[in-house]
Image (cartoon, rainbow, N blue to C red; front, side, top):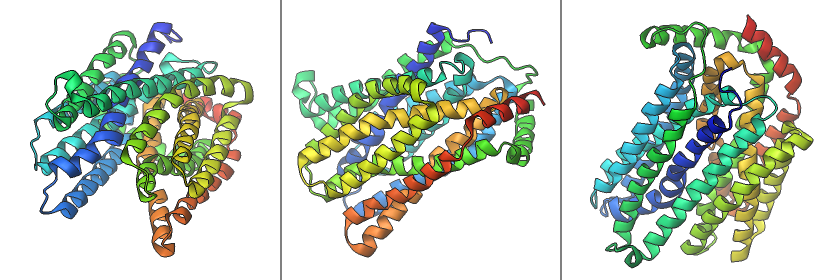
Amino acid sequence: MEGMNSKKSIFSWALYDWANSAFATTVMAGFFPLFFKEYWADPNEPTMSTFYLGLANSLSSVVIACLAPVLGSIADRGSAKKKFLLFFACLGVFMTSGLYMVDIGQWKLAAVLFVGGSLGFAGGNIFYDSLLPSISTDENVDKVSSLGFGLGYIGGGLLFALNVLMFLKPDLFGIADGAQAIKISFVTVGIWWAVFAIPLFLNVKEPRIHDPVPLGQAVSLGLQQLKDTLKRIRHLKVVGLFLLAYWFYIDGVDTIIRMAVDYGISLGFPSDSLITALLIVQFVAFPSALAYGWIAGKIGTKEAILTSIVAYSVITVFGAFMQEKWHFYTLAVCIGLFQGGIQALSRSLYTRIIPKKKAAQFFGFYNMLGKFAAILGPLLMGTITAVTGNPRIGILAILILLIVGFILLIKVDVEEGQRMAEAYSIE
């Protein structure tokens, strides 16, 4: 395929991770939850504002999860991966930047814009991931996927560090106060996302489709293709087994990532320590994701993922018994060591066992499961915590997900999956 393994196209593709990860760090994990409660929320109805934000988040996840396989199927038939990526990237950029215009107390508008930004982020990733097979080979896909995640961590971490400095020291930047600094940080995310996404659109070629059709016709054909694939996916049993394993272990991983800050607060750790821990994760994850691409080449991709699952199991146990502030920092380092690796290698392993001609459609299923991840984990953790009255016991519930995912992944035969994918592609 033209452009295959081009250093320029590989780096340009990976740079999109650098671009949109600013949304994940500064907005999703960092400032939006804090600012929503302390600035935008109605002080007379704090409980309702939190409820509506949670509801909006859930709805956006369900929408993108349901649309993901359909959009992927349409893109495969219509030669429109980059067009869809551009649409979702623009949606994310404009919605995120629009948060600057939201005044104090306007929590409903803030929630709408945040959901729009989240849809842009998640929707764009479907088509970003689906371009991976076209710019990599079976020999370098682990390294290419790891490069994307690695650049994402360092890029998102750098801008987040700058935004945190703006918030803590607004005078250094000529900013009135911390609230104004946070609002400006949303604009910096939009600019960062837009600027660093440009190389992908300039240097990564749209994968060639043997029978391209107009976009309108692609909608009908894409839906029919999706229906056919759902019927025939039972023949791709390795893909199905991997997706089931992935759903369990990534649910455990995402639960740890998303619940770590709340868990730290419940244990009494100060907020400045939690922000420091978030920065630690970003900068440790960058070299670790790159290193994991090399490790996978030595011991095998599946084996490297299994190692990460074991590591996360140890992290879960360690988290249940931590007492001191330095324990939390150590936990952040450990999460950073394996977070990028398990995400990058899961993506590259999946790339190996799916039909390349239908990459967007199959990545639609992959991202659908990713959006449904961290649903069972928090529910399990919350239920056990409520029953026992002890969050330390609650976090140990994550071990169930990791163990099930580990057992299922052991049964995945990668070589058989590659053979099935090749046979499926030529039918």
